[in-house]
Image (cartoon, rainbow, N blue to C red; front, side, top):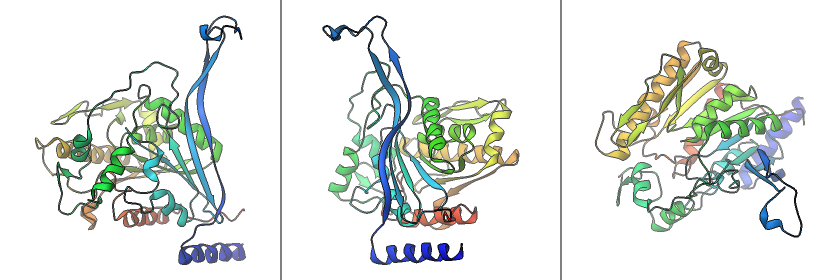
Length: 354
């Protein structure tokens, strides 16, 4: 066993020193979803009438890479609203994204396009795809700055080409957002790959904690700026939170379900340029309210014996991060904070059985 561990460490160090990543296996697949059938009998001479035909949809797309010497627990990346799995890949200015950074650190990675988004866009229900001009809204709400001026300390790349790359990766929902459907699908992924780490961003965090409640293979939750859908035990939730940017929805579940979140360590990260008071600047007040509720949520989990913490990065000396901290120029520093968390929770061990 010691010999295997030594070989794994030597290979891990060599790969990092020479700048390459050895991939033992990679590929892609779909998971979850279902099919529906139109009544009647299919006729090959008249197939436009749809009778007897089936339609598959509401699945997730998954791209995976397994390094030559991998750690025991794989990492599943779950994106948020208006995104796809692309957000975890190469950054808008061409640097390594979290997919590559975690691979270099020995983690197998599973990048999800959630149901009704990106490469999993086939829904089972009709939907209207909204077309709206929202570039400036995104600039503000994701805390790059106040359009068109970047925050002075912002870590997001400030050149025009990078900003265009970011805007181009936006993708619409091709069907209604359904956090339970997403959670069911991601849970099926964990049934397939076994125990692992779930890293979720923004709107994806809501499906993240439902997945963790549903599936014991989720060994920890790393949540990046949860956007909505915080859950509380019945009678303990704050209800609808109003801010200058709109409403923040919270929901209540049974105490029995909520306590399932106490089984695993949970860490929540928030970036910079979030005020400590309400404001009429929508892009700032939006995150002031979410940070406030995230702290209340973690406190409630811990009250029931859980292990949840909220880390506001400026409080630990890391400044300028946006809502997309995994794309920011200091994304390796952000990943290092997460690696330290995983080491502390003993979730960074190498897989010695292979």
